[in-house]
Length: 238
Ligand code: ADP
Ligand code: MG
Image 1 (cartoon, rainbow, N blue to C red):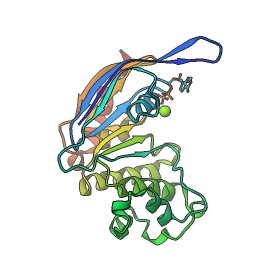
Image 2: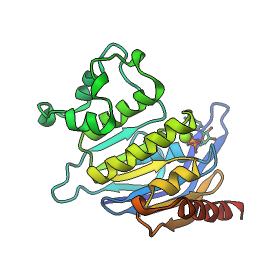
Image 3: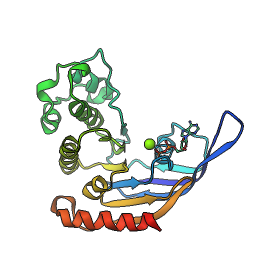
């Protein structure tokens, strides 16, 4: 349903030189799968997502997103920062992002799934970091997206909060199956959430390895996760 073929992406720097961000990234996503992309800091992960989202069209290659039969065709994003409007309540922040056709939908179920029903009248400044990230997830899922793009959504949280949010996201994935593409540099996070991990090289990035994970997320033990992490590390060391 998503066909990514980035042949090359170069930034033109102010001093006239060029910076090669992506060498070659080519993959397809199957419907309702969860794919994680991992790679070193600065290798071009956010650049790749911006290209997929059509926010940066200055690259060679192609990105094709095919709406599935019965699918909404909508794409939702969750970035590193929650990017909530400070003068709007939690509920207003979520509703403002929703298309007209969904405006009358009750949000209680989604808010309960994410544990934010009790803060729906709060303003973003009244939320802890972890709650703000949950609101960002609610805003994305409220769109009923066909494709969900996440760029390090749990970065700079303490370990316990990040782990709690991972478990929440895992639950949402079961309750609301969506095709998801998530960038993270946290290998445990990738090995916990993904059906498949795409490992990128250093910049200019290309795919080092495409690692499927056969055990379903809800049945993965810590040992299973540690094995996947070790496998990814061994690929990255080559
Ligand atoms: P990642 O998300 O993997 O950490 P990015 O995609 O943000 O990496 O950046 C990849 C490389 O491209 C980095 O070296 C970064 O400095 C550079 N870069 C990102 N955006 C721009 C831009 N708008 N102009 C110039 N260089 C950029
Ligand atoms: Mg990034």
